Length: 155
Image (tube, rainbow, N blue to C red; front, side, top):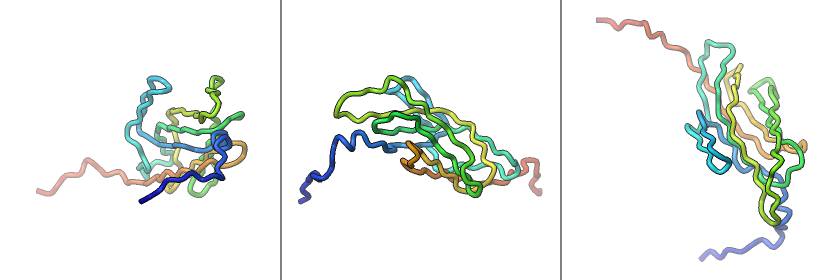
C-alpha cells in the first residue's frame, strides 16, 4: 500500500511565489473566447517546411502558462539550430493579476507568431524571467522537397 506523505521541508508560500513554467504548446490554430476559455487546435511537436524556400514563414499559435509572483516581464528567447538566439519576444504582464493570498498566481496567454525558419533542425524556446530560465521547449523543423504534380504516369 502506498502511503502519501507531504515533504515537511517544502515551504508552501515559497512555492506559490516561485516563478515556474507550467505549459508551453505550439498549435496550428487557436480560438480565444475569454481568459478562462482558450481552445488550441492541432498541437505540434514538429513542423514540416519546403526545402526549396530560403525563408520559411509559418504562422503558429503559441500557448504559455507560467505561475508565481511576477514583478517584471517574461521573455521567450528563440534559438535556431546553429545561429544561437535569433529572436527575443517580451510578454508584458497584465496589470490585473489576481493577488489572493495562499493561491498560486497564473499568467497565461495565447497568440499567433509568424515564425521564419531559415534552417532545418531543432529550435529551442527558452522562457526567461529575471535573467533565469523557467524552462526550454524544443520544436523540430523538418524539410520536405516539393513534388512535381505535373508528372504523367506511363501508360
